[in-house]
Image (cartoon, rainbow, N blue to C red; front, side):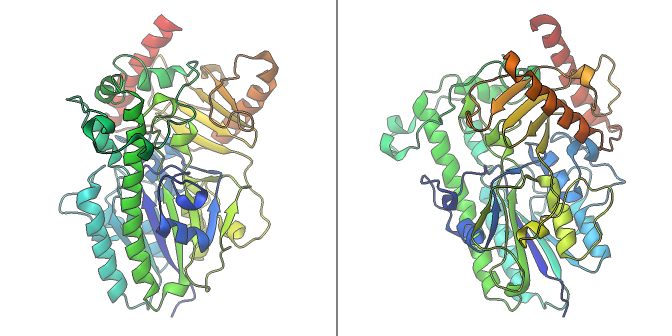
Length: 474
């Protein structure tokens, strides 16, 4: 029997950091994610690498940022020369299994993992009502029959609460009355409007063109529908979102219950995280794609239901900035595998074991090819690259001359990101310091040209719209 632990990576889709009852949210109940927290260490400064499904998942799979992976949006394509976590673990003696959502375009999950369940047709972005329970049943069969002779790595990709997107799509073609008009709920049943429902309109050009203007680039049909919403519609969106989270928490509970009945539970490390968050009315936004906290801050828990894997129990780490790129090196470290030199992430294992370790001073996040953010203890800095006049399809950066508009928020005084400080002269030194951190991080990235026609077409189309806005509106 191997001394190396089994590793179980459970991930949800579109799950914001604070949507967990153990963290104090009283509008939902997540007893099974709470169980992972009580048996492990949660990180309050946990950020995705990029707030959209495929991009964030490419970072999980590789330990690289999305401008390195080639998956800079849902239509990207993972560079063929980058190894993924399944390939690395398999080559080092682990049995590697995948179940549920993968969504890393350009890499066939069946070639890197043994797949327990991936649908007759590949599981796409949504469809939790069809796929999540099937994934749980497949995992149940695995846990019941695994012989335990070799260590395993199993990743379970649940889709919920992503199906909140399907709720939003329902509004595209028809007006749906608010829940009070329908007689479904009372107003007392609904969560309040988010504190940052009203927002500072001095946003980056990239954000305006993608999410604000007429004929915005992302989900224009939904945008037209929500313009007619009243406050009860927005509150019902969050109520519905929480119900999707409770559904996936129940699926996680079934897996954990079965795991506890196995002989290898005590030596199984569990990592829980999400690819990105959900706006749910904050800044009058829906879904993800932006660089506000609701989209980019996600749960990250390292846990063990037994005592054979050393993890801090019932602990909230409020010190270390954790990123989606850290999953890959953390798994390698627990599996006693050398972390590839090219990896941008860092192993969280020493932190979870309570050891001193050198660590990053800020989180770095990318979005929509041109968007960038740096999060420090004191400030959140958001900026963008202006699109190139002649696109060479090499992801932008580091280039201070091409940086565009800036948003700056105080983490202490304005945690809801309601007041942009970027135009106030007394904050220019802060902006300069954050910009230097951004450029320093980006100087370490290994960007390759985007060569596939589909992603090139997206970059060209979006870039044209951005240039037009810069020329005509700024």
